[in-house]
Length: 128
Image (cartoon, rainbow, N blue to C red; front, top):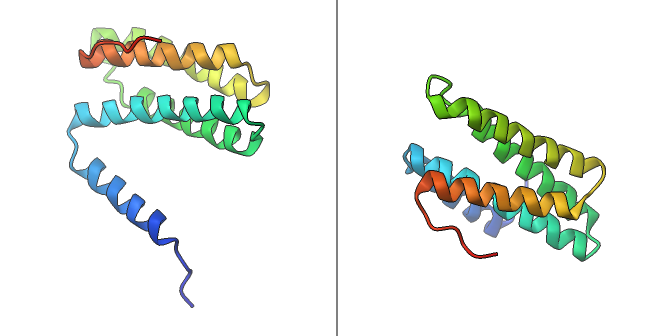
């Protein structure tokens, strides 16, 4: 018997896969930054609204985004060593927030991620 799939979720998944397969390296990096930032925003929203389940999943998503950014570093490039240290510090904050949620640390992580994304992609940083 076939498993029932939510049609909206199926279309969303296909849309996402098409976006990923059609992106260049810079597009994929921007996507990782955007997804991790959105996940941190969801975690903050979930904390405000007492949704520990959503907060946990959002922090896991942010953690995966940071791990993906780390794994994509080309260590032959001079800036990669600094980015490695930076991403690992952000990853440590997110990992700690999974155990003991600290709103200020999550907000700082989101803001730091947005700052580095803006500088790497040449986009202006949005005002806080």
